[in-house]
Length: 151
Image (cartoon, rainbow, N blue to C red; front, top):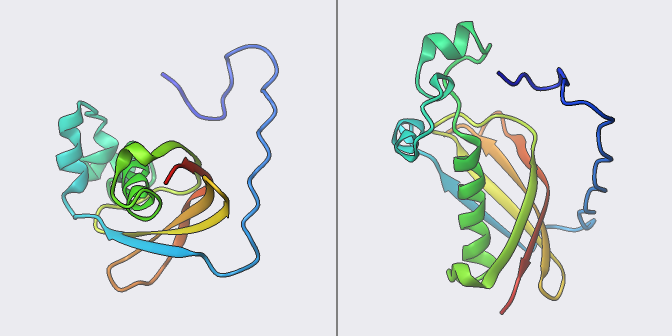
């Protein structure tokens, strides 16, 4: 079992990479993509059967969440879809690398809005926020995002 922050891997933790700078201006693009209420259940078909994503009792009583959370890889994929749409014109082969840091869980049914800043040719920085269907309670869920692309 792995418990975040409990260590046990030996050695000193590595130095965290320096966070990319978000330009002090409005984003060049924002792409909002809704998730479905049953998205985590559908995503289970990928083979991740962790009850944190499907069992309300487990999510509340053992993990401390109000309800099951969306898989991190699914969240990452939704942000990737936004990046492909904006930076690659819908062509996934034009987006060569994506990196980001998870900063908060996402709940199925929330809308993910990815804000994108082009910083130099072939490079962009981004962050993704989640908000409920009414747009309230927005919070940062992916930060320190960097994407490399062509075209």
